[in-house]
Amino acid sequence: MTAKVTDELSFRDSVNLSIDKAMATLDLPEGLAYYIKTTHDVYQVRFPVKLNGRVESFLGWRAVHSGHRLPAKGGIRFSIGVNQDEVEALAALMTYKCALVNVPFGGSKGGLVIDPKKYNEDELEKITRRFAFELIKKDYIHPSINVPAPDMGTGAREMAWIADTFKAFHPDNIDHMACVTGKPVSQGGIHGRTEATGRGVVMGLREFFRHPKDVQKAGLEGSLEGKKIIVQGLGNVGYYTASILSKEDGADVVAILEFDGGLYDPKGLDVEDVAQYKKANNGVKGYPNAKYVEDSALLLEEECDILIPAAMEAVIDKGNAARLKAKLIAEAANGPVTFGADAILQEKGIMIIPDTYLNAGGVTVSYFEWIKNLSHIRFGRMQRRHEEKKYEAIMAALESDGRRVPDYIGAALRQGPSEIDLVRSGLDDTMREAFQAIRERFWTNNQIESYRIAAMSIAIEKVADAYREGGVYP
Image (cartoon, rainbow, N blue to C red; front, side):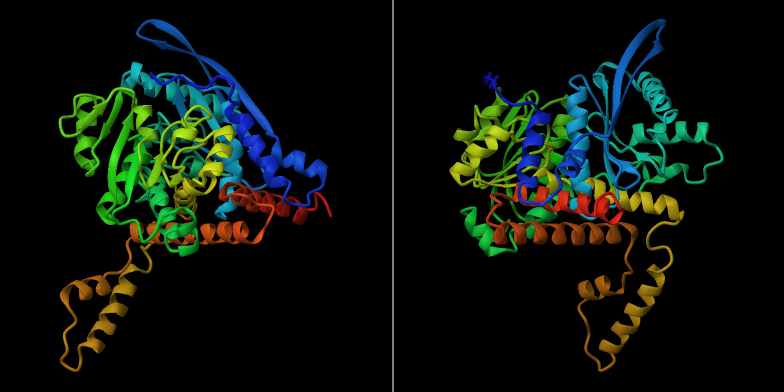
C-alpha cells in the first residue's frame, strides 16, 4: 500500500494557513481578521441508544464557524474518522463557500463517529433521530438558526428522519421542512439536489474552459470533449461528476478510484456500468471490463488532463504531489489537497480549481430548497404554463408564413421550465458568476498566486463587509 506522509499539517491547520494567505491580501483590522478566522461555537454531545438489547454510546459534534448570516449551513457526516478539528475545518470552508457564491448563510458542520455500514436501517434511524434530538434541543437544528444537509455517510433518507424528528418537537412551526435540506422530493426536497454537487463541479469546469487564457495556463486547449479524466471516489459527488462529464461533455473517464481498489482503461470506462457493478458487489474489485489496481492511490499518478478528487480530504499530500501528471486538479471533495501539496503542485505548474468554489453546487441548491420550503410552493408552479402559452404564440408567429420550425427545436421552445430546469439554471448562473470573480482577482492582483487564494480572498472580504455594514467596525 502507498505510504502516507506523517509530517503533514492537520486538515484544520491546512485550511487556516490558506485563510492566512488570503487575509494577507486584504486590509483588515487585526481583531476582525482573528474573529472571522475562528470558530464561533462547538457543541459536543454523547448519547446512548439501545440496540438489540445492548446500549451503545455515540459521540458527535455540531460546529458553527460563522453566524454573520443566518441560518448557519452545513452537512452532517457519519464516519468513523470524524473528529472535532475536522468538523471545525469543514464549518470554516462552509462559511467561505457560501460567501463566495452569494448564498446568504453562515458556515456550520456536524459529524457523528459511526460506521453506518455496521448498522441496519432501523438501527440507523434510531441513532439518527436521537442525534437529531440532541441537536434540536440546543437549536443546532432550526430553519432560521442552523440548517444541516447530507454529507459523507448520510443522504436524503437521514434528512427525512431529521425533519420528521424536528416536526415532532415543534408541531406548531409551519416552516419545519426548512430545518434541513437534501430531503426526498416527496418530503419537501427539490428536484436536482441529489446531483447538485456533481453537476456544480461540471458547470465549474465548463466555465473554466470558456476562458482560453486560463485553459492555456493549465497546458490544455479546446473544451472538455475528449479530455482524459481520473475520478477518485464514486460516491454521490464522484458518480454524478463522472457520469455527466462522459454523457454530456464527451470526456473520457480513464480511471475510477474506490476504497477497495481502482479501475483503469486508457480508452475510457463505462461510468454507468462501473456504478452498477459497485452497487451490486459493494465495491469495484472483480470488475471485468477494466484493469484492476489494488492500491488505488497509485492511479492518482497516472497521466490525465483533469484529476478530480471527489471523496476524502488530504488524498493528495507532500508524499505523492510531486509524482502527479495531471494538468488540472478539480477539487470536488473538501480539502483533498493538503497545504504542503498545494505548494508542490504550484511549482510543477499544475492548476487547481479549489473546493471553496467547485463543490459549492450542493449548498447552492440547498439554498433553493430552503427558499422553496419557506415559500411553501415549488418552483415553476405559478409561471410554467404561462411560459408555455407565450412560447406557443412565438412558434405560431414564426410558422405563420408557411415555414416549419424543426420538431426538436419546437419541442424545446414550447416547453415551460420545470423545477429542475430552474434549479439547473440557477446553479449554472451561480457557478459562472463565482468563477468569473475568482479569475478576475487572480489575474489582476499580484499578491494572489492561485485560484484558491483568490476565492478565499473574495469570500473573506464579503464576510468582513457583512460585519462592517452591520456596525462591528467602521
